[in-house]
Structure formats: C-alpha cells, structure tokens
Image (cartoon, rainbow, N blue to C red; front, side, top):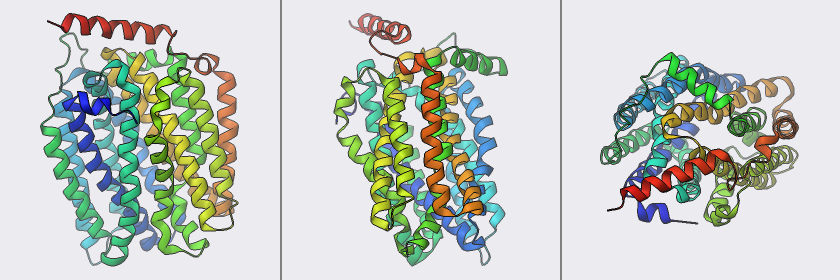
Length: 420
C-alpha cells in the first residue's frame, strides 16, 4: 500500500487519525442499533426501516451540505457536525439505560445522525484534494478505505461481545468517547480557507452542482453503478436473522466483519491501482463481482462459506470505491468539489439505506436466503445494463479524459507558482 499521503501531509494524517477513531465507534453503533431493534421488536422489517428513516434527512442534508462546503469554512462545518453526531450517541446511550427503551428513539436519532453526517461528509470529502497532491489521490482513497475497514473488522466482533456481556449501552458509551477524541484531532487540522469568489450557499448553487454532474456522463456512471449495486445487494439488516439460521447467533459480528476483512486485504495490496487508468471499467467489473459474490453467499450451506463470499464482496466494493474516488478527486474543480461531494454522498449512502429496506421487505416476502440471493442477481443485471447504457463512463481513461487533463494541469501550475 502506498503510504506517501501519510508521510507528506500533516493535515491528511490528522484527518486519517480522526477517521480511524470515528470509524471504530461508528461500527459499534452500526451493530448495536439493529441488534437493539431486533431485541425490542423481533421484526426484520422494523430493522430495515431504521435505514428508511435515515433516507430523507440524508438526501436533503447531503445536498445542502455540499452547497455550504463550497460557501463556508469547511473546518467549522466539520467541527459543528461532529459535535452534533456526538449528541445523537448520547441520546442513544440515555435511551438504552432506560428501564424500557423506546423504539421510536432509534428511528428519530437515526434520522438526526444521518442529517448531521450528511452535512459533514461533503466538507470532509472536499478537503482531500486540498491536503493531498494530485498524483497521490488514488493512494489517499485506498488509505481512507483501509481506515474504514480497520474499524469494520475490529469493532463489529468487539461490539457483539460488549453487547452480549454488558448490553448495547456499553457500545454507545464507547462510541461517545471516540467522538470526543475525534473532535480533538479535527480541531488541529489547518484547513485551507475558501476561495474569495466562492458561491453563496443557496438552492441555485445546489442546482448548478447537479447540472454539472448531469453534464458529466463519467460522473453519473460512478453514482448510478454504486447506487444499483447497493440497492440490490446490500443486506446487513439480514445479518441477525442469517446468524440465527446457520445456528450461530453468537457469530453475528463475523458477518459484519467478513466484508471488511476482504476489503482490508484489497486495501493493503492496493499499490497496483496506481497503474490502472480505465477507472470506469474498473468500477463496473468490481460491482459485478460484488453482486455475484452476494448471490453465491446466499446458497452456501454453512457459516464459513457465507463468510468467504462476504469477504470477496468486500474486496470488490473496496476496489470500486477507490476508482470512484479517484475519478471524483482528479476531475472535479475545487469550486464544485463540495457540491459534488454532496451528490457523491447520496450515491454511496442512499444505496445501503435503500438496500437494507429492500432486504427487509424481500425477507418478509420470501425469506432471508431469497432476499440475499435475488438481490445479488438483480445487482449483476442492473450493473451490466448500466455499463451498456453509459459508454463514456465505461471508456473513461484518466490519461486522456479532458476533465482529468485540465485538473492535472491546473494543479501542476499551482504547485509551480507556490514554489519560492
């Protein structure tokens, strides 16, 4: 794995460290909330609807978060929203400590958390090209994925142990502590100031960002393929019930960790991605592998077979994410970076939310294995169709694409003028 962004950029190191701490805590809650909902209701549909409740706040706040990221101080936005996320975990902790925890609190807090996270993410994403050299953006994307996967491997298994031994309140308490540490690291980041001619945050600026994205078939391909892959094949809401069916309810955390193990392996061997230039085709192939692996996991007779294909799916998802992030960061002008990051957020977060809702509904109609397998096959079909419909995305080449060449030239000129 290429570690040059960590060596060369202090601000990237701080953002990376904050991300490691936050991901660890977030995954604790990611396991604890559906587990608590299952314990309170016993309903797969109720678990899936937690994601559905987060959808509208994520859409609205994601677009607005992109607009304010291009107009206001990105560092302040990140700090304020991090404090808001900390507050939501505190509410979950208080609710879990009640004699009779309330189901509605999980839905309301889930919506609030999605809102704060969606306001924050565009500002975080738009900082990446400012603190990392242009030629290091693929490596930075791989490191960011590694950061996520590290938390995804350690935290779910630990969360299962904590929830079983001490209850979900303990998981929420640990997450609260991680947010406080993350706040301290983010405070130290010296984010570059916004441009003097930055557009004011408004509906008009949001519309301009959407128009820019729609006018770029290569960008639309990254969004649409990822949404299709997640809507049809993302199924973590099924994991508590799948664990029961294979006779290993205590192994719930392993289902969450398996994809992260595969993704981590792909991350630490990701040096080869620096030599790939057909990023659009890379996203398509990775999404096809993701869907096929999920479909094959559904027919595995035992837990170990399921875990193996979940790991393959996780590796494919990580590669897709690296190539999508590279296209975004190497081709989008800084003046649009925040607004486009808001659209990116919608693509990679709305898919899993809707995917869990779909998984819960299909489980209700045909069972857990049916939901998992049919979703994987639908994913393969949808991605193949999009590959045929979006030739400019399929044929994207970073060496010749006009947007990539223009942005690379602009940043090289800035680097030259910045030298004494």
